[in-house]
Structure formats: C-alpha cells, structure tokens
Length: 289
Image (cartoon, rainbow, N blue to C red; front, top):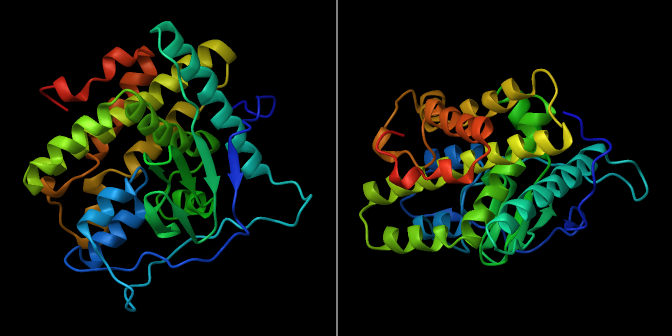
C-alpha cells in the first residue's frame, strides 16, 4: 500500500502511556469461550458486549491482551504514523462521499492505547480488539492487535491493517447515517437469534463500507499496490465467525454468528471494493448475504 506520502490525520489521540483505571471484568452467562472469540474479533460494539456480560468488581477472567508499546518520546513510530495516514485517507474519502449526498461528515477520533482504555462505552481491555464507541464517536485500537492479526489469524500486510481501521470507520459512518441506532432499537425488542442476525448485517455493511473506501481512495490517490486486495480479502476471511468458532471450539453454530462467515465478509468487502458505491452496501435489504 502506498501510504508514506499520505496526509496524516490530526484526529489521533495517543494514550499508550496513560494506563490505569478499572478494567472490564466479565462474568455472568457470556462464557469464557465466547469472550475469547470476541477477543479475536474487531468491530465489536462494547456497549453490546457489556449488555451480554455482567460487569463485576470481583476478580474474574483475565483475557490475553496485546501491547502496542509506545516507544520513547521523539522516537520514530512507523505503525502509529501508518494509522494516522489511513485515518486521514478515510477522512478524505468519506468527506467526499457525504458532500456528494448533501451531508456533512463528522470526522471520528482514533485512540491508541495499551492493554486497557476508558471510553464513553465503558472500560475495555485490548483483548476485545479494535472497536468503535458510538457514544463518543471514537475508534479505539491497541496496536498489538496487528501482531495477532498477522501471527494468530494469518492475515499479514499493511492493507490488512488498513482494512481494520476502515471497518471501524464504517461503523462510524453507520452511526452518522442513523443505521446503528435503528438496528440497536430493533435488537432490544428481539430475541437472541434475531439480534445476532441483525448484528451480522451491521458488520457486513461495515465491511462493504471499508471496500468503498479502498475503491475511492485508489481512484483518487492510487494507494493500492499489487497484492493489497488479496491482503484485505485475507483479513476479511480470517475473522469470519465460522473460522473463529471452528478454531476455538471445533464446532460452528451459525445462529450464534454476530459478524458473518468468512465467505460473507469477503463477499461484502469485495462488493464495496469493486463498486465504490455506498448504495450497493445495503445488507439489510439483501435476501442472500
């Protein structure tokens, strides 16, 4: 991915040395295995996670977390620099898309943290993975997740890393368009299976929005290199519910999916990537995901 000459976003908050606070300790019925699955996901809405878990001050499950480090002040930080460029590129793309529709794009902030972080959605540990908090319109990421993406999930490459950010920005776009609120309101009146099915459609739409960004960014700024598309598709496949469940438990339960299968995630990311059209990302009207 050609990113070195890109514009750096000014909407990055580096909290990697601001550790502290009470981490989220999950108990109740969510289960340790499900928490481990969520730890490998990205795109988790922490408010939804907290609704499924009983938050307790008592000692509980300790989740494995990555550490992105922070380096010493003044030292070069290529990965943080990369994140700032990708965020800036998403800003340029979505400002253009929203302007064409007569709307205003409100740029999200992106927070870099290590191990755990306080957000308007509550405390979260790095094991939750990158997430978007609609309450403060911020994206949170521990850069150690990229090591897990490469080593544990088998999805290396800078464009795979960019896809992670673009997916979270996709959730921000959904929030600005009112889609997230509509879905969450229906989920509150639904049973677990119906709520999960709606979550899948929300996540697949964010994948499609990530593809729209990649398409338009490449057309406007020629950012993609040979192999980048394969990296992005590989990342989408790596975090499919079926693959993660099979690797973690040996079993696949489609009715428990919250993000979509590997094939579904690849299909919707590819749709956005090939069309560059936000109108082609309506997963809620699709009969076949």
